[in-house]
Image (cartoon, rainbow, N blue to C red; front, side, top):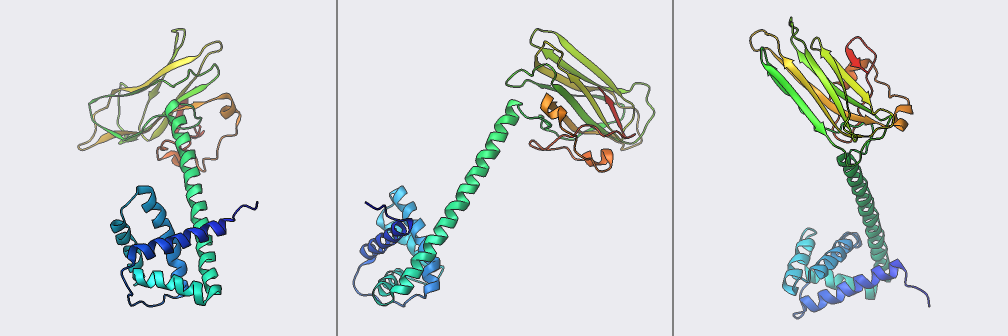
Length: 302
Protein backbone atom coordinates (compact mmCIF):
# COMPACT_ATOMS: atom_id res chain seq x y z
CA UNK A 1 0.00 0.00 0.00
CA UNK A 2 1.49 3.34 -1.07
CA UNK A 3 2.27 5.85 1.66
CA UNK A 4 0.60 9.27 1.38
CA UNK A 5 2.93 12.03 0.21
CA UNK A 6 3.76 15.10 2.29
CA UNK A 7 1.74 17.12 -0.18
CA UNK A 8 -1.27 14.88 0.35
CA UNK A 9 -0.86 15.22 4.11
CA UNK A 10 -0.66 19.00 3.83
CA UNK A 11 -3.69 19.01 1.56
CA UNK A 12 -5.62 16.86 4.00
CA UNK A 13 -4.71 19.19 6.86
CA UNK A 14 -5.88 22.16 4.85
CA UNK A 15 -9.15 20.44 3.99
CA UNK A 16 -9.62 19.65 7.64
CA UNK A 17 -9.01 23.29 8.42
CA UNK A 18 -11.71 24.33 5.90
CA UNK A 19 -14.17 21.90 7.48
CA UNK A 20 -13.36 23.05 11.02
CA UNK A 21 -13.78 26.70 10.09
CA UNK A 22 -17.02 25.92 8.30
CA UNK A 23 -18.37 24.27 11.43
CA UNK A 24 -17.07 27.00 13.73
CA UNK A 25 -18.33 29.95 11.73
CA UNK A 26 -21.53 28.50 10.27
CA UNK A 27 -24.36 30.77 11.23
CA UNK A 28 -26.27 31.19 8.02
CA UNK A 29 -25.29 32.78 4.72
CA UNK A 30 -22.89 35.70 5.07
CA UNK A 31 -21.71 38.15 2.45
CA UNK A 32 -18.15 37.42 1.35
CA UNK A 33 -15.55 38.45 -1.20
CA UNK A 34 -13.31 36.04 -3.05
CA UNK A 35 -9.66 36.35 -2.02
CA UNK A 36 -6.96 36.33 -4.69
CA UNK A 37 -4.70 33.35 -5.25
CA UNK A 38 -1.62 35.18 -3.91
CA UNK A 39 -3.47 36.17 -0.74
CA UNK A 40 -4.67 32.59 -0.28
CA UNK A 41 -1.10 31.31 -0.73
CA UNK A 42 0.13 33.68 1.97
CA UNK A 43 -2.71 32.87 4.36
CA UNK A 44 -2.82 29.07 4.14
CA UNK A 45 0.51 28.39 5.92
CA UNK A 46 -0.43 30.84 8.68
CA UNK A 47 -3.81 29.23 9.15
CA UNK A 48 -2.39 25.68 9.17
CA UNK A 49 0.21 26.61 11.79
CA UNK A 50 -2.45 28.34 13.87
CA UNK A 51 -4.71 25.29 13.67
CA UNK A 52 -1.90 23.04 14.92
CA UNK A 53 -1.06 25.40 17.78
CA UNK A 54 -4.69 25.70 18.81
CA UNK A 55 -5.13 21.92 18.73
CA UNK A 56 -2.00 21.34 20.85
CA UNK A 57 -3.28 23.80 23.45
CA UNK A 58 -6.84 22.44 23.30
CA UNK A 59 -8.25 25.95 22.91
CA UNK A 60 -12.03 26.32 22.91
CA UNK A 61 -13.81 27.22 19.67
CA UNK A 62 -14.43 30.79 20.77
CA UNK A 63 -10.70 31.48 21.18
CA UNK A 64 -9.84 29.71 17.94
CA UNK A 65 -12.22 31.98 16.04
CA UNK A 66 -10.58 35.03 17.61
CA UNK A 67 -7.16 33.75 16.55
CA UNK A 68 -8.22 33.01 12.98
CA UNK A 69 -9.93 36.38 12.69
CA UNK A 70 -6.73 38.14 13.84
CA UNK A 71 -4.67 36.39 11.15
CA UNK A 72 -7.22 37.10 8.44
CA UNK A 73 -7.61 40.69 9.58
CA UNK A 74 -3.99 41.42 8.64
CA UNK A 75 -5.03 40.72 5.05
CA UNK A 76 -8.31 42.63 5.29
CA UNK A 77 -10.25 39.36 5.16
CA UNK A 78 -12.93 37.70 7.26
CA UNK A 79 -13.68 34.11 8.22
CA UNK A 80 -16.48 34.10 5.65
CA UNK A 81 -14.09 35.34 2.95
CA UNK A 82 -11.56 32.63 3.77
CA UNK A 83 -13.96 29.74 4.08
CA UNK A 84 -16.00 30.61 1.01
CA UNK A 85 -12.91 31.37 -1.12
CA UNK A 86 -11.41 27.93 -0.46
CA UNK A 87 -14.71 26.26 -1.32
CA UNK A 88 -15.03 28.35 -4.49
CA UNK A 89 -11.52 27.48 -5.74
CA UNK A 90 -12.10 23.78 -5.02
CA UNK A 91 -15.29 23.81 -7.10
CA UNK A 92 -14.57 26.32 -9.88
CA UNK A 93 -10.76 26.63 -10.35
CA UNK A 94 -8.93 23.43 -9.49
CA UNK A 95 -5.67 24.64 -11.08
CA UNK A 96 -5.52 27.66 -8.78
CA UNK A 97 -6.66 25.49 -5.89
CA UNK A 98 -3.68 23.19 -6.52
CA UNK A 99 -1.32 26.20 -6.81
CA UNK A 100 -2.51 27.49 -3.43
CA UNK A 101 -1.68 24.19 -1.72
CA UNK A 102 1.59 23.72 -3.60
CA UNK A 103 2.80 27.15 -2.47
CA UNK A 104 1.66 26.52 1.09
CA UNK A 105 3.40 23.14 1.14
CA UNK A 106 6.66 24.71 -0.08
CA UNK A 107 6.45 27.51 2.48
CA UNK A 108 5.78 25.12 5.36
CA UNK A 109 8.71 22.91 4.35
CA UNK A 110 11.03 25.92 4.22
CA UNK A 111 9.90 27.02 7.67
CA UNK A 112 10.44 23.52 9.02
CA UNK A 113 13.98 23.43 7.61
CA UNK A 114 14.74 26.86 9.11
CA UNK A 115 13.44 25.82 12.53
CA UNK A 116 15.49 22.61 12.36
CA UNK A 117 18.62 24.60 11.49
CA UNK A 118 18.01 26.96 14.41
CA UNK A 119 17.41 24.01 16.73
CA UNK A 120 20.66 22.37 15.60
CA UNK A 121 22.51 25.66 16.10
CA UNK A 122 21.11 26.07 19.61
CA UNK A 123 22.08 22.49 20.44
CA UNK A 124 25.64 23.17 19.26
CA UNK A 125 25.85 26.36 21.32
CA UNK A 126 24.49 24.56 24.37
CA UNK A 127 27.07 21.80 23.96
CA UNK A 128 29.85 24.40 23.73
CA UNK A 129 28.52 26.16 26.82
CA UNK A 130 28.54 22.90 28.77
CA UNK A 131 32.12 22.27 27.65
CA UNK A 132 33.14 25.79 28.69
CA UNK A 133 31.48 25.42 32.09
CA UNK A 134 33.29 22.10 32.56
CA UNK A 135 36.62 23.63 31.54
CA UNK A 136 36.88 21.20 28.63
CA UNK A 137 37.85 23.67 25.88
CA UNK A 138 41.19 24.88 24.56
CA UNK A 139 42.40 28.43 23.86
CA UNK A 140 39.29 29.92 25.47
CA UNK A 141 39.01 32.26 28.43
CA UNK A 142 37.55 30.17 31.23
CA UNK A 143 36.81 33.22 33.38
CA UNK A 144 34.13 35.89 33.16
CA UNK A 145 36.24 38.97 32.51
CA UNK A 146 35.55 42.55 33.55
CA UNK A 147 37.54 45.76 33.87
CA UNK A 148 38.67 46.90 37.32
CA UNK A 149 39.93 50.39 38.16
CA UNK A 150 42.43 51.22 40.91
CA UNK A 151 43.36 54.63 42.33
CA UNK A 152 46.87 55.76 43.17
CA UNK A 153 48.51 54.55 46.40
CA UNK A 154 45.79 51.91 46.81
CA UNK A 155 46.37 48.26 47.61
CA UNK A 156 45.43 46.16 44.59
CA UNK A 157 44.49 42.52 44.62
CA UNK A 158 42.47 40.72 42.01
CA UNK A 159 42.33 36.95 41.94
CA UNK A 160 40.61 33.87 40.59
CA UNK A 161 40.39 30.21 41.47
CA UNK A 162 39.37 27.55 38.99
CA UNK A 163 38.48 23.87 39.34
CA UNK A 164 37.54 22.00 36.15
CA UNK A 165 35.06 19.14 36.18
CA UNK A 166 37.90 16.74 35.36
CA UNK A 167 41.54 17.05 36.35
CA UNK A 168 43.93 18.26 33.65
CA UNK A 169 46.54 15.74 32.49
CA UNK A 170 50.31 16.06 32.51
CA UNK A 171 51.66 18.31 29.76
CA UNK A 172 48.62 20.58 29.70
CA UNK A 173 49.58 24.25 29.64
CA UNK A 174 47.63 26.78 31.72
CA UNK A 175 48.05 30.49 30.96
CA UNK A 176 47.06 33.51 33.04
CA UNK A 177 46.86 36.75 31.02
CA UNK A 178 46.01 40.34 31.90
CA UNK A 179 46.61 43.82 30.58
CA UNK A 180 47.63 46.70 32.81
CA UNK A 181 46.65 50.17 31.58
CA UNK A 182 47.00 53.66 32.99
CA UNK A 183 49.39 56.56 33.40
CA UNK A 184 53.10 55.72 33.74
CA UNK A 185 54.51 56.30 37.22
CA UNK A 186 57.66 55.53 39.18
CA UNK A 187 57.26 52.76 41.72
CA UNK A 188 59.59 50.94 44.06
CA UNK A 189 57.19 48.06 44.64
CA UNK A 190 56.05 46.57 41.36
CA UNK A 191 52.81 44.68 41.12
CA UNK A 192 53.22 40.96 40.55
CA UNK A 193 51.22 38.18 38.94
CA UNK A 194 51.06 34.76 40.52
CA UNK A 195 49.82 31.47 39.08
CA UNK A 196 49.58 28.26 41.11
CA UNK A 197 48.56 24.78 39.98
CA UNK A 198 47.36 22.41 42.70
CA UNK A 199 47.85 18.76 41.73
CA UNK A 200 45.83 15.77 42.83
CA UNK A 201 48.73 14.53 44.99
CA UNK A 202 48.68 17.84 46.93
CA UNK A 203 51.84 19.22 45.31
CA UNK A 204 51.72 22.84 44.15
CA UNK A 205 53.52 24.39 41.17
CA UNK A 206 53.84 28.17 41.33
CA UNK A 207 55.26 30.99 39.19
CA UNK A 208 55.37 34.80 39.55
CA UNK A 209 55.95 37.71 37.19
CA UNK A 210 56.53 41.40 37.98
CA UNK A 211 54.33 43.98 36.27
CA UNK A 212 56.84 46.75 35.76
CA UNK A 213 54.73 49.33 33.91
CA UNK A 214 51.24 49.90 32.51
CA UNK A 215 50.47 49.73 28.82
CA UNK A 216 51.49 46.10 28.43
CA UNK A 217 49.91 42.70 28.14
CA UNK A 218 51.35 40.29 30.71
CA UNK A 219 51.24 36.50 30.51
CA UNK A 220 52.36 33.78 32.85
CA UNK A 221 52.02 30.07 32.09
CA UNK A 222 52.71 26.68 33.65
CA UNK A 223 52.55 23.10 32.47
CA UNK A 224 51.18 20.26 34.53
CA UNK A 225 54.29 18.23 35.49
CA UNK A 226 54.87 14.73 34.15
CA UNK A 227 53.19 12.05 36.20
CA UNK A 228 50.75 14.51 37.81
CA UNK A 229 47.25 15.87 37.27
CA UNK A 230 46.02 19.38 38.01
CA UNK A 231 42.95 19.47 40.23
CA UNK A 232 42.60 23.23 40.67
CA UNK A 233 44.39 26.50 39.98
CA UNK A 234 44.71 29.90 41.59
CA UNK A 235 45.93 33.17 40.12
CA UNK A 236 46.14 36.75 41.26
CA UNK A 237 47.70 40.14 40.69
CA UNK A 238 48.73 41.86 43.90
CA UNK A 239 50.63 44.92 45.15
CA UNK A 240 50.35 48.67 45.56
CA UNK A 241 49.48 51.17 42.86
CA UNK A 242 52.05 54.00 42.88
CA UNK A 243 51.14 57.62 43.47
CA UNK A 244 49.42 58.98 40.38
CA UNK A 245 48.42 62.45 39.15
CA UNK A 246 45.06 63.78 40.28
CA UNK A 247 42.18 61.70 38.88
CA UNK A 248 44.72 59.15 37.64
CA UNK A 249 44.11 55.42 37.87
CA UNK A 250 45.36 52.05 36.70
CA UNK A 251 43.02 49.55 35.07
CA UNK A 252 43.20 45.80 34.64
CA UNK A 253 41.39 44.04 31.82
CA UNK A 254 41.94 41.05 29.49
CA UNK A 255 41.84 39.09 32.74
CA UNK A 256 41.84 35.56 31.39
CA UNK A 257 42.80 31.98 32.18
CA UNK A 258 43.04 29.42 29.39
CA UNK A 259 43.93 25.79 28.87
CA UNK A 260 46.10 24.43 26.06
CA UNK A 261 46.22 20.66 25.65
CA UNK A 262 48.88 18.81 23.66
CA UNK A 263 46.75 18.97 20.51
CA UNK A 264 46.17 22.70 20.89
CA UNK A 265 49.87 23.36 21.52
CA UNK A 266 50.82 21.45 18.36
CA UNK A 267 48.56 23.62 16.20
CA UNK A 268 50.11 26.74 14.59
CA UNK A 269 49.25 29.94 16.46
CA UNK A 270 46.80 32.35 14.82
CA UNK A 271 48.13 35.50 13.18
CA UNK A 272 47.87 38.51 15.45
CA UNK A 273 48.32 41.12 12.70
CA UNK A 274 50.53 43.54 14.53
CA UNK A 275 51.04 42.08 17.97
CA UNK A 276 49.51 43.12 21.25
CA UNK A 277 46.97 45.53 19.80
CA UNK A 278 45.07 42.53 18.47
CA UNK A 279 44.36 41.57 22.07
CA UNK A 280 42.80 44.84 23.15
CA UNK A 281 39.42 43.30 23.90
CA UNK A 282 38.91 40.40 26.23
CA UNK A 283 37.49 37.36 24.47
CA UNK A 284 34.05 36.47 25.78
CA UNK A 285 33.34 32.85 26.69
CA UNK A 286 33.56 30.86 23.47
CA UNK A 287 36.21 33.09 21.79
CA UNK A 288 39.84 32.24 21.37
CA UNK A 289 42.59 33.48 23.65
CA UNK A 290 45.64 33.52 21.38
CA UNK A 291 49.17 32.84 22.63
CA UNK A 292 51.29 35.89 23.44
CA UNK A 293 52.74 37.95 20.59
CA UNK A 294 56.49 38.45 20.57
CA UNK A 295 56.64 42.24 20.71
CA UNK A 296 58.19 44.76 23.03
CA UNK A 297 54.75 45.53 24.43
CA UNK A 298 54.35 42.09 25.96
CA UNK A 299 56.07 40.47 28.90
CA UNK A 300 55.73 36.77 29.57
CA UNK A 301 56.89 34.13 31.98
CA UNK A 302 56.90 30.53 30.78
